[in-house]
Each structure stands twice: as C-alpha cells, then as structure tokens.
Image (tube, rainbow, N blue to C red; front, side, top):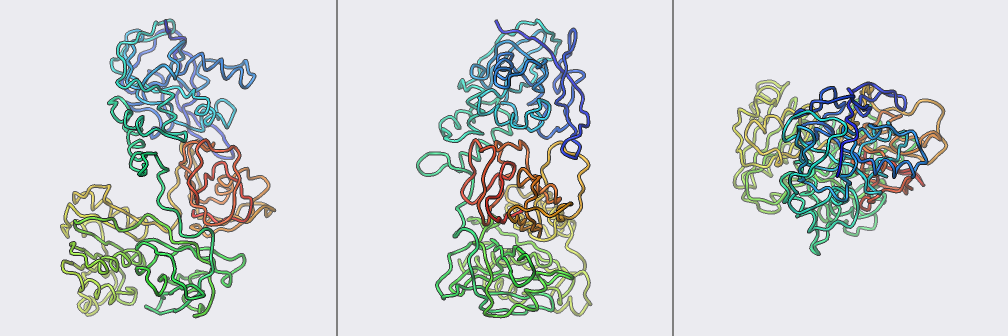
Length: 579
C-alpha cells in the first residue's frame, strides 16, 4: 500500500546564483501535522515562477522515496531530507513507471488527478547542488509528476494513498516524459497522449507540434523547417547597388561565377559578414526585399546614424565587392491559403512584406491583399512606387499609408493619412477577421499591431511577426536583469574561439571562465532563452550560422542540423550564432 511520507511547503525567496538573483519556491520543508490542500496550492506554499510551475494543472508536485534512494546511491550522498527535490508530497510508492496520466488518488480528505510529469527546470539542480540534475531526472526516467486537486481537504504524513480511477490509455509518467524530451518518439504514443483529457494543456500543445512535424514515414521529426541551402558562409558578389531614398539602398547579390543561387522564400533573411566594414568582420542580418530570381538575392538596407555596417553598405559598398553570406533563413514566410492577406509594416520593416507582395504577384494571386504602412513622410518611404505598382497588378487590393511628419501636399500626393499607424487606427480600418497578417517593424509597433489584430477578431495563430533584433529573453525566475544593450564582456579579453552574436552585433573571444556559449551571452547581456541549462528542454535552441561546437554535457536529444543548444555548447572553432 502506498503512503504519504511527508507534506512539504515553502514560500518563494531570492537566492544568489551566478552573480544574479533567482526568485524561487524550490526550497520546500516538511510540515508537522495536517496541511490544507486547495485548488491551486497547499496552505503555506508558493511558486516563484508561475509560468512554469503552479496553477490548477500543477497544484501539487509528487516525488517518491524510491527515487530518493536511487539518487543517494548515484551521488553517494546521505544528506537528503524530504522536500529536497522541490516536491510537495514525498510518497512511498507511486513510481513514475507505474503511475499513469489521468490516474486519480485519494490521500486523506483530498483527491487528486495526475496531469503531467515534472517540468525540467534548472532550479531543482540549484537546490540539490548538482547543475546536471534536470537532465539526469529525464535520462534516468525519474522525473516525478504534478497533480491537480479534484477535491480539497487535509492531508498529513502517514495517510494511505488509494487509487480511485485509472487514466485512459495507461500512459505512464515516465513514458510521457520521454515522449517530450527523448529521441525516437512513437507517433502512436503521441496520439494516445492527446486522447487523455487529464493531460495538461501545455503538454498537449507540445505533443500536437511534434505530431504536426511528423514526416511521411510516420516517424516524428524534429519541429524544425527545412535546413539552410548551404552551411556556413559563402562568397557572393555585389551585382548592383541602387539608392532608393536618401538613407536606403537596395543591394543585389549574385554568385561570383554567374551560377543560379538556391531558391529562397519571400520574407526570409540573409546574414552578411562584411570584412571591409570593421575588424573583426561585423555580422548583420537583412531581409530579402524581393522574391529571389535568376538575378540573385536583393536586400534593402537603411543607413542608421552611427551605424558602422549600415553606413558602409549604403555609402561605400560598390558593385564587384565580395561579401560573405549565410544561406536564407527564417520562418516569417507567406503561408498557402485563399483568405485575405494583411501586409503591415513601419519604416524599413516593409522589406520582408514587400517580398511577399512580389510573391503574390508572381503567383497571380486572386486573394484580397491589404497593404498597410507607416512612415514619417515620402523621404523616408523607400520603395513606395514599387509597392504601388505591384498592388496595381493584383485584382483585389487595398492600400493604406500613414505619414506622421509630412505636409498636407505630400500626404495628398501619396494618398496618405495623417498621423502614425497606431493600434486604434488599425482597428478603425475594419480589417477582415478571417485574414492572415504579417507584421514587421519596431518591437513596440509589432506589439501594438498584434493587440489590434486580436481585438479585430483575427486568430492569434494567424498573426505573424518578424523581429531582426535579438529575441526577447526567456530566463525563468531570474530577477534584476540589466535590460541594457548588449556589450563586450567585462574584464580581460578571452583567448578562446571568436563567438559572434549576429542579431546583437557582438563579436568576442570566448573567455576562459565561460563554461558555455550561454554563459558568454549572459556576460554580454545578449538576450538569451533557456530553462533547464542541461540540454533537455530545447528552449535555448539557436541557429548556428557557421563554425563547430562541442557539448558538455551531451544533450539527451540533439537539435536538428544547423542548430545548437547554447546552454551546454562550447565553440570548437570561431562560430556565428543567430542571436
């Protein structure tokens, strides 16, 4: 008979960690006597990161004494007290290979339902003093599990645990955990998991994505798009430089020998390494502004004040120059469909949506197309005539331009509205609710447009955005982050391979003190995305544009070719990362 050995609670607190502060509730300690279990928590308990822990589906975390004994043997430790793994209930029995998703249990006055395995999280390793523990919990198939509270009530150490219902499908916690985090997934088990109502919505969403990525053979592939057309950088010749306005120039790139370049999709971007602009050679990304054709690739670059690279490209670059170029990349591409298309941009953000407009014309599309753009005025509205001509070639279009700093005559000639393209102005246009939207511009602009489009009734899954700066951070539990711009690391220059963060414009040798690319990114305040820090969760997956890496520890499920898990990667050569 299974039994409850300990009830453990703890409120979140700030803990010093790697020069920063983590707000975490992983420190749990035994309760003496009965404890009241409620829908969202046990009295006296709390979570520091409510995005990853807690809530109705993760109200109570369970871990087994059998696993305690396993880790005592594995680490040679005899100092493990109840709550050591951040669990609320330490139990005898209910092992991960026996308990199934959807099982129900009565403990004391309360009743519970199993909803998902433990989320891989670095904080359990922080509490335990073993950074690799999150990966070991998965590889040793001993994650523990969460339960939701079906009936509230008091529980206490010594209570018997009685199973009151068996989950449909009999999919164990260990097998469910392996489906998400380990390779060689079985599509039949993924479908089985999705048929279990008790499985938490977050895990259901992850399994749907894995099934969507299943290839024709029925095997589950990694959820990545087709790989890049070539690895690393290749030399391309500047065939043409065309001034489009006082600050914007279009650059056409071709193969040095005149051979056709691999196809690319409208909306994708190129990453350029420009040896003549500075030392070391800076790396920047620019979207394609026209559908690639036999003449090669075209990008359009705005010269920014004090911009070393953009200034070079718009004022000093000449035809015949050679640039190092990584293959076209990006998922901001025009999807197949028949409904209305909204192409929304601000400033130089028009370039990827302009390439989509080219693609619609090339397809002779009969879709309803809305072109919505905001600029300061005609001098800062490059490629306006090109967009207007393309729209005229389509049968069902609507063009709406906003000028925020133009004369009445300039607005009249451009048929532009007065003022900025704001959330309220977009809502006032009454865009069709069944449209698919593509938005590019400054981050605040895209956030406003996303909110407006959602208010207009467009499904968020059909709202796509492109951000050329560094992606927003995912640093669960970490507090007091700098929020400042990326910079070179403090202290003496490193002696390791050169690491370039392309989106952030930072190139620096790896310092001897950095154990991983992630640690270097953090030292440079380059926005980074991570959770487990041990190569399990794939939150940190990042495109590797060039170079070679080695892993320590080795990830349980390696990422697709052309991508890298920065949390456990070290460069073997000079590398360029799309972050």
